[in-house]
Length: 336
Figure (cartoon, one colour):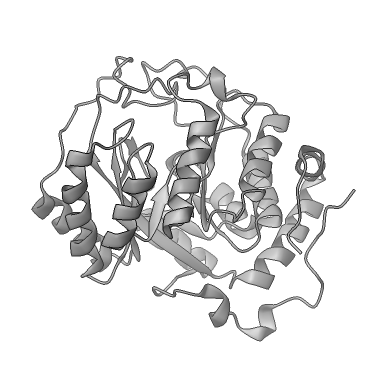
């Protein structure tokens, strides 16, 4: 039976001793995934800057002077060149982002064409384009889009401190439109916005209690960008970030959890502990939309040190899990 999580459940987990929490998260992770396999995606900005939203962490907002060079919609040929490079470098999924509040209907043929071209290359596709209507979601699904990213960012209680140009329910409505269209959901949040532990707990409860949890959950560490309102925020303590990864794994056991923005500022040790806590997906490449990412050669070295390998375009990771790595114990139930 699907568990209904409460903020009290999640807060209790987030406040557990680090070693105990890591052990519980590893038990869950090994039940659902091979702990040595990492899914790799590549992210490309296909339209950069001049976004009308006021998200206080984002360099792409037209409201802040961040020095970002804006770019209109990228030509399809250029997108495909980047997709071929990503596939050659081992990425199984190609993700594309456009700095819109929402796409216009006139943009849909362009987006549908991109999806079909990249699917023909044998890659999974993901897009993040802002709010989607029900009809737009259905059109993207018909074109073959595999995933749609639309992060909740933070808790409902803290959300209006970060964004005022759309409300939380609108984000949930987009996730609902995406799910109803048959596209898989990619949705997570950002740590380091100034949120409390209770806010982190509330965000995870929102994700875990969706009618069907996201198949992919990006957990971002705030990248402080000069010119944005959050440029002077305190950096989140690494152990707090790792614990949030662990609780995400416990609460949403069968989803991929991705280390996303901010990985470039994490030490090898922090990343290794995140993988131990249940993270099993990364963005690969030198750039994430507008911010730096960990360099490819650094990732290769780290994976060699840790004995990790890339997921080989497996559609159902569970079927590939060797029996010998599965624990006999049932996964942790945080019933209070």
